[in-house]
Amino acid sequence: MEQPPLDARLGAAAAEVLRLRDGQALPQRDWLCEEVPVALEFNGISHAVMLATPADLEDFALGFALTEGIVEHAGEVFDMAIEESARGISLHVEIAARRLQALKLRRRSLAGRTGCGLCGTDSLDQALRPVPSVGHGPLLEPGALARAVQALRPWQPLFETTGSVHAAALCSAQGRVLLAREDVGRHNALDKLLGAAARGGLDPSEAVVVISSRASIEMVQKAASRGCTVLAAVSAPTALAVRAAEQAGMTLVGRIRGEDMVVYCGARRLAPSSAQPGS
Image (cartoon, rainbow, N blue to C red):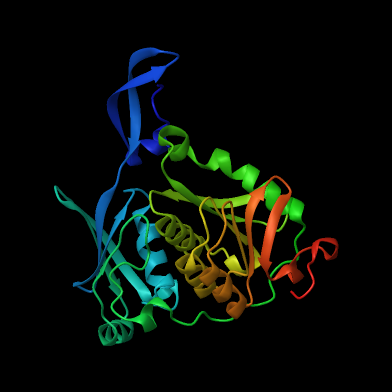
């Protein structure tokens, strides 16, 4: 296999493998996605440990702080430092004192895994926290969502190299990719995307969030927390995710295959010809 692109090397590791093809065993070099424990620490207080891809960590720290409600806006994050060790990576984040006090009131120990964004949550109230209502957002054509999904692939160098990571992208109402991030965890990819959007001054409420995974409850919660009005997933959502999206007033689309897709709620934001009764 060829050398991975430069911007993917941080998240990939080489491995010698045996590829079986057409009855032959061929020794080859392959590339595997890195999966590293990343500890998030706010003002010296340990808050969460997530297994993540060690790239775009500043985006991840800010996005996590925003989508988990630790800070309300990027201006409440004053500084961050990355500390690497043999055991993993620590992200030291300095936040406003008033936000730290609020964090202490609801402090929890969260041990995240790549397949779950709620692991370690210590109460049902935290796991099923209400989602905020979102604004009007853009009016879309289904073709724009199809173009966005198709346009996402060139923005996935790590997936192209390893085949084992998720992507989240911010796209225009016309289906152009504005920003994308990758991670071994789907919710981590979304945090990185929303953190990068905040750092770059992009408003997710006027764009479309496209994810390469299924739309589970934490994906809806995180997207709604940043005012995202449209969440489009390549795979299907869960029933709980659909109920949360309806509560937030979001448009949730899944099972996107070209211009074939399923609108689970919020069809009013799609072109009238594609709107479904009762939405």
